[in-house]
Picture 1 (tube, helix red, strand yellow):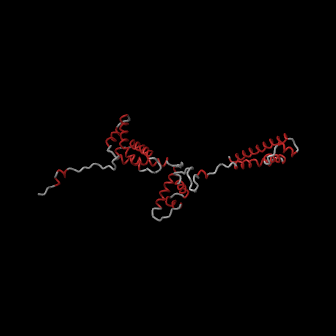
Picture 2: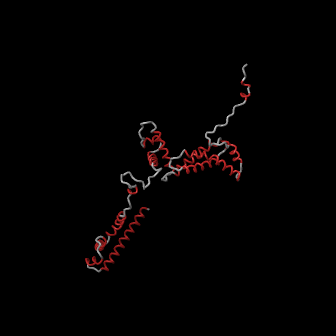
Picture 3: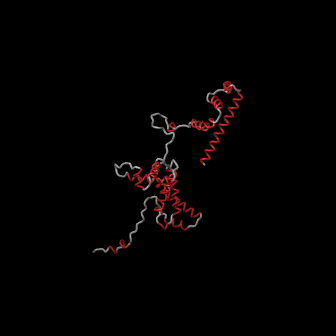
Length: 281
């Protein structure tokens, strides 16, 4: 005799299955979040909040692990992820869905902001960072097909809608995420030869050029004998006594002429600099 399955107890009872969680580190905390939302500020609410952060912390650590090997210590990434988790717990509204769906993008976004704002070796403006990201994505999209040539600045500009100047700034920013230490050894074949060894030092000759040009006009305005005295004293390195013997005057007179001539040249140079500054202002 056939059995009517529609009237059997097994068929009559609806099948219920527990909601599947994506990961083992996603605990069932719906009731605790509902209670947290209802509690006023105070010790009880703070304790429940800390409890929720603790039970969800393994998930935050798992998300932080996705960003390992990018130049940042795992422990630092976990701290950033924990900060994102705290923000997620504080801002979560239970009526809007599962906590995990809200927490994962919140924590991921916090880590990405950390890389964007803290991991640059050079401080790059936010606008340039955004240009860098657009250029990086465009280069990847333009070279997806095997055998595709490296896109030019014009190609990237056409693909992104940016100007070529903006693309150039983005390309330069691609090389600014990390820097090379001045102590890094260069590949020159000479052991111990670093980048710092290739850098030039200050050239004091430039200061001499500036000083000479500043004094040139004042020297031209001196009488011929005073110019000759200064030349013998400072260019031929003659003593005041020898200059006095050559010109047939006293050493004291030579000393006074040198002092007076230098003062005139100095004053002329200072007046010229002031006039130059006034004209630029």
